[in-house]
Length: 243
Image (tube, rainbow, N blue to C red):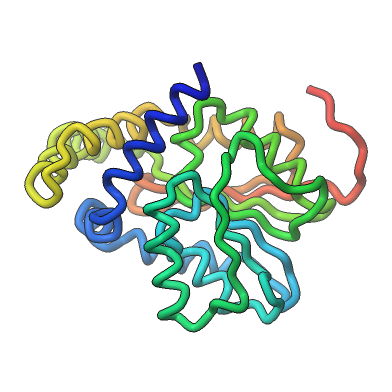
C-alpha cells in the first residue's frame, strides 16, 4: 500500500515540477521565502557540518544551506522526483554551490544512508506527503548524529476562530482554482490542499517528535499558524529509545 501511495505521489510531483516554484509563490503569496529565512536564522550551522535536506524538491532550501557551508558535498538534497531534481540541479549551478551540494534520488521512508551520519536534517513541506510520518521521523532520527538537529518547516492549521474559516476557504476553494488557472492542474493542487488540511496540528507534531525520541522540541508559527517550523534534537547519548 505504501509503495503504491509513494508511486502516485511521485507521479504527481513529476507532473507539477515545471510549475512548482511559480505556484509556491502564488499560493503562499510569496511568504514561503520569509518562513524559510526565519527558520534558517534559528539553525546554528558550522561551516563543516554535514546536512541532509530531505524532500528537497527544486532545491531552494538546499541552496540556502549550502551557502552557509564550506565542506564539499556538505549538503545532500534527496527527493524521489527526477524532474524536481533536474530543476534543482540547474538552480544549484546558477547559485555556484555545485561543490557543496550533492543531489540524490531516493525514498524518504528508507533513507540510503548509514546511522549517525548527519549533523542537521531539514525537511520543508515534505513530511505531510509521506505515507507514514512516524516511520519517516524514525528514519531521520536514525541518520542524525547524536546531538544532531531536525528542522521541519511545514504547512499547518490556524486555530484562531476568526482566522481558521478563512484559511479553510482559501485552501479548499482558492488553491485548486489557482492550480487550474495558472498551471492547468486542478486535481494535483486539490490533492495538495487535502494533505495540508489533514496534516497533524502543530501540537500533534510536537508529540510525534517526542515519541520518536527527539528532545528540546519547540516550534515557531507563521502567518497566524498557516505554517510552522518544528525543531528537535537527537540526544547526545546513543541509547535506544523505547516508546
